[in-house]
Amino acid sequence: MKYSFFILFLILFSETQAQDPDRFKEELVQIQEKYNSVWDASKETVVFTGSSSIRIWKNLQEIFPEHQIINTGFGGSHASDLLFHLDALVLKYNPKKVFIYEGDNDIYAKKKAKDIIATTREIINKIKNKLPNAQIVLISAKPSIARWNLKGKYKRFNRKMSKLAKKGADIEYSNVWNTMLTKRKLKKDLFIQDGLHMNAKGYELWYAVIKNYMN
Image 1 (cartoon, rainbow, N blue to C red):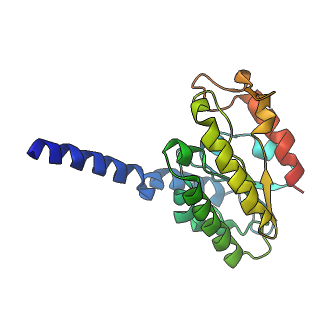
Image 2: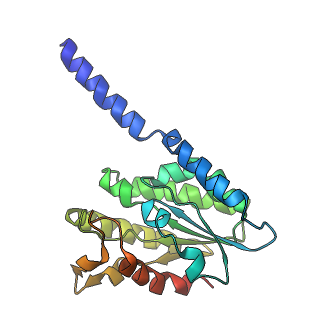
């Protein structure tokens, strides 16, 4: 009996630690230190934020040279993490536009789509309360080799996020899912070895979609 309780404690402790938003503390410090020296508050700013698909998109400033880009992506994050750190990652930069990529890790962690959407709605409301004129672009969850077995859940989540975007002013939905498929089959040459994160070819497809929402 004692052994069973010990195992249960370890499971609960592990789950609690996995959702501890302070686990990103060091990464957030690095992001802030990076942009404290280069961010020009007098210029209009576009923030890209979310999980690792944003974090490792290293050439955002190069491909959008006419804009001041702040990339505050933090790997492994969930929508709830972004909500918790929204002030430091988004609001402090007073952006005119915010691109958000969250939900990928949430679905993989078996969170319900409706709960992720509820958290995303909170993120939107918090941004709008502070920056009523800010435009928000919700980037769809992407397909991947590593998580292709969950494609049905990702597609349902994307449909809900698309509906969420239609309900709000200055909110748009950017569908990167479809561009990564050919006749419903995943383009497998878009990924690095882990089958989850994209290579340069994958990001070229993202750019072709997302550039339409930049201006």
